[in-house]
Length: 300
Image 1 (cartoon, one colour):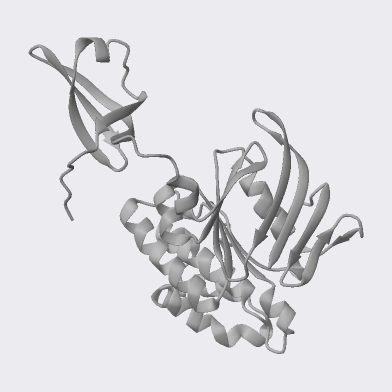
Image 2 (cartoon, helix red, strand yellow):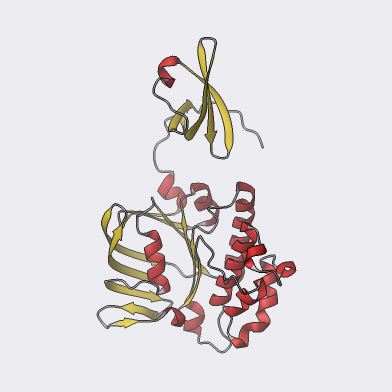
């Protein structure tokens, strides 16, 4: 088990936030931290990685204590078997793809570099610099380097082999829908291949259902809900309606009605609206659409 108990006073855009989190995570699980921006999700990942120190609390991973405020114990980031992928990827611009991946490997692990490159689809890009890569390719390099960090060193103790975490801070948020889906599949495959414990920060409910076994919902620094994605998101009784979030692209008048052009997810749709419904709408505004969900037409 991984046991996390952290308290930290944080300064955010909306003022001070008291992070107070207690979590139990099973070894080898894929877990998502879900919640609005500023809830404390990234700060929690940074505490697990050793990049930020809690004010008080205790972190134990695979039987190894990483942080204990009472005992004044705090392992450095280098002492923790943690791979981290941030939103900006943080690649070394002067190193090639192969050198970025190898940088995270121990000398005794360098023979693993070609396998990591192949698993993440980078074999043909080994000599390129980050400036010559697409967003998806940079994401793969960051992921390969993070995996390199959590590979157990030959001869490591069993406790050390169990104490490995892959921490992902919305690494796919800047990618288009097709590439995002492809990399989600690869990420799940790598999680299983390496037997990792993975913590993902995500705002995408579809992504949570696809990848996660367990989800923790954070709000204002505290965990409000936890459980499987179905337990957390599907417990409200059905009201027979579809409720969608959309953004107004254009409003045009045709005869006695108005046509609203909207972005719903990745699609553009048009709906008919009355004068009263569009009276206070503006282009760029976000709105909610509610429609009856009985007898929908489904296509694949």
